[in-house]
Amino acid sequence: MPATLLEKLVTARYEGFLRDLELLVNTDCGSWDAAGVNKVADYCARRLVELGCTVDRVPVGPSDGRALGDVVVGRRQGGLLNGRRILLLSHMDTVFEDGTAAARPFHIRNGRAHGPGVTDDKAGLLAGLTALETLIAAGAETYREVVAVFSPDEEIGAPGSRGLIEQLSSEADVALCLECAREDGAIVKARKGIADVHVDIRGRPAHAGIEPERGASAALAAAGLVIELERLNGGRPGVSVNVGVIRAGSRANIVCPQAHLEAEVRATTRADLADTLTEIDRLAARLPVPGTAALTRRRAVLPPMEADGGLVDAAVAIAAELGLELRAVGTGGVADANIAAACGTPTLDGLGPVGGGDHTPDEWLDLSSVVPRTTVLAALIARLGAEVSGYLP
Image 1 (spheres, rainbow, N blue to C red):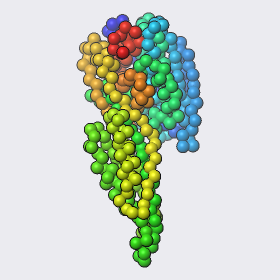
Image 2 (cartoon, rainbow, N blue to C red; image 1 turned 45 degrees about the vertical axis):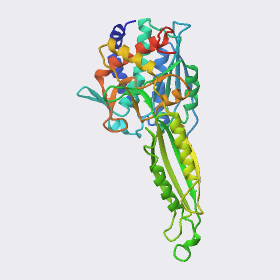
Image 3 (tube, rainbow, N blue to C red; image 1 turned 60 degrees about the horizontal axis):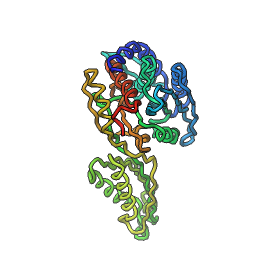
């Protein structure tokens, strides 16, 4: 079906999109607010049922002893038995604390919608539901199955939903992530991988005034290690290392017996991420202060999402039919798209409407982008779902 015909059907659903956007933005649903996230989950589950999807609500275990909301998974069988399974990924949680929605409720000013989570990821979530509804109404379900996943914990690294997303990604032929487009309208073809590295350094205490020579300063060892870690920046293109946390000692008159570092590593390729983590281990094993030793632990390792040219070409071609010039860029931020890509599933991101100011009080959504971007998404689902699309191997 031509994208221009789908655009008319999306346009007819714009007012409903706007009403639901206001409802969702005015619902507090920070990652740690399980009850609030589950209010959004109730909405998603209800909409999916109305669209004729089979729906599963999957409770996920607590993270750091704190409750998380449910994952909502909707499945809709298409009209092509030999077509492809398309995975849609969006998230229901925001970074904002309880009370933010009341303090900064949804409002529209100069063609932009504002409010907590309006672009990250309420608009993307609704774009997915609207695209699916549009394809059903058009009789254009040219795919084997669409699996829509609404996660409760993307903003904290998906500790509860990651395993399920990995499972569903492994079963899918392609993953489309519904984070919103960049401020300049670009979609996201690649995302850096990320890893948190914690380093505990053990030294030897001594009286700092009487016999400092008997001590081994973990603080001094930590300082030397920080300098070495900072030197890793720029050693490989796209690699960054940031030491964001340093703790050491308890009293000034004791040679410091322990220190703790927390560093974040980002890289554009899996090889560079792995090599940088190996280099950090090597540096930690060769501390500059005799008598000190380090233990490194890796946490929240998420491989990069590397670019898939075929998916980019498909999105660009559809946009051109609508008179839109579409670019694709890489970004340093991570998303559920990283999880899908790590499973070897061709993945494209930034397919929601255009917005910016994520994670800030100035978050905004360009309302003029809702219809064209949702149309591109709907057409992309239909064309990639067809076995003869030519954009996937």
